[in-house]
Image (cartoon, rainbow, N blue to C red):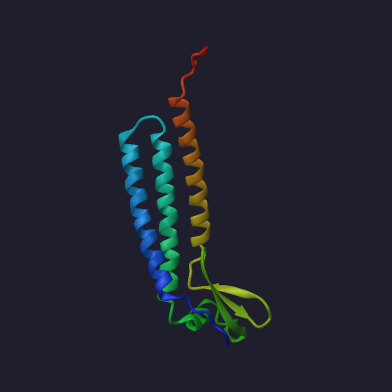
Length: 152
C-alpha cells in the first residue's frame, strides 16, 4: 500500500495562520459594523464571512492533523465495506481532504467532514461579493456627484 501521510509541520503552520486570520477578520468585522457609516455592514459582513471560511479551513486542517498517524484507520472508519480495496491515500491541504484510493480506480473521502469544503467555498464567495459591494459603496460616497470641469 502506498501512502502519502499529511505532514505535521505544514498542518500546524496552516492551523496557526488560519486561526490568527479568523480572529483578525472577526475583530475587524465586528468593529466595522459597530462603527457604522457607509458600507459598514458590507465591510463587516465580508470580514465575518472570511473569518467563517478561515474557521472551516482550520476545522479541516485539524481533522487531518488529528488523523495524521492513523490514515488507514480513518479509511476503515469512513467505509468499512470498501476498506479491503484501498491501495493508497492522497492528502490535499486546499481544500483539506484525505482520499482513500481504491485499486479499482475510485476513491472515497475520510477524516475531513463533508461540510468543510462547501462552507469554505460559500463563505469565500459571500466575502468577495460583500467586499465588492463595500468597495462600490465607498467609491460612490467618495466620488463627487458633479465633478467640476476644469479648464486650463
